[in-house]
Image (tube, rainbow, N blue to C red):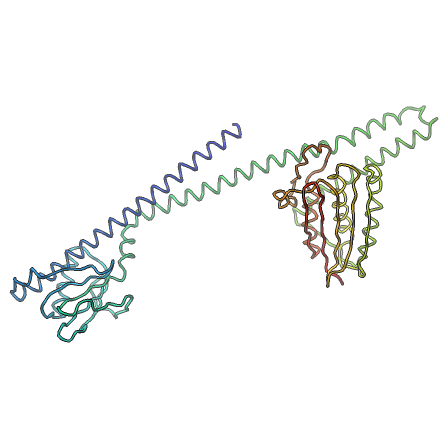
Length: 423
């Protein structure tokens, strides 16, 4: 199946699931509003019947028309009675009418006496109709001064409504879990696709990197098989040198791959010792001389640090500097010029490697330390490598208790800054 088809299927599936989720959430919200309205209607009906019961108890039907139920807030009601209210009778009728209306929610109520202009009684009942200690969650204010009334407050109204929507909540959570799982699966699929592409690119690069020196060694060895070559020692030495250089190149490439294999297994064994970093830099420059001559490159050193001694692993430090110098040379178009500057910054030893190469764009800079990642080089097609060097530098600098930073601008080169703690 083509990559475009797979991505189209993923997009369609994602849009469908998002649509289902939005629809589910919409219906759940609609269901909540419906349940809330039903609850409020039941409460108003029950409170109106309580008021009617209280007035009928006094055989006073003329006051029945004056009865009003006011919803002062979503969970707070007041009922005008226009007559004195007996707390025990009120509680009896509240429990009776709430039961008849299937209202199973804790509530508190209060009775207002207009003669004293104050609330004279308050109490609270749980879902089973048993009295409980009042835990006020809302201040029940006096809203009218010229009439008798009682007020009712439902502290758990929202929670009770939501608890009655168990099936809806379960189905919504199930949809959200499916959506979340799908997103994770899509992420894994796309990541695997990217890793597959990276792996394929790595294999192609590795094949090319190994094929060239192997071919060169093979051709040179065929020439050396000719018995007549003994008569031209200069030619013999030249081909022997070629074989030696290509074998060394193969060895370096294999060592890089093996280094990353050790890092993947976290099999990093460090040999800590006090090292003169200036000596390591000079040795690295000496070892890279053949490449410098081949690329007609120049390395200028300003080893200005007064204290170049650091506690590190000599082998890995050498590899780090070699990788950075190798990158500086590879990503320069003509006549590479590299500067190496050392300095002491407070308690740190700093190495700066500055090149005049093609530079790195802002969007690429965050990725250059990722494994197998290689900066696009535009028209520069002869840049070889596996995309392992900078990843190795990043990992090893962390293990050596140091840090690496990069500053770069397109067409203006790059600066790699290594920082180590001084001793």
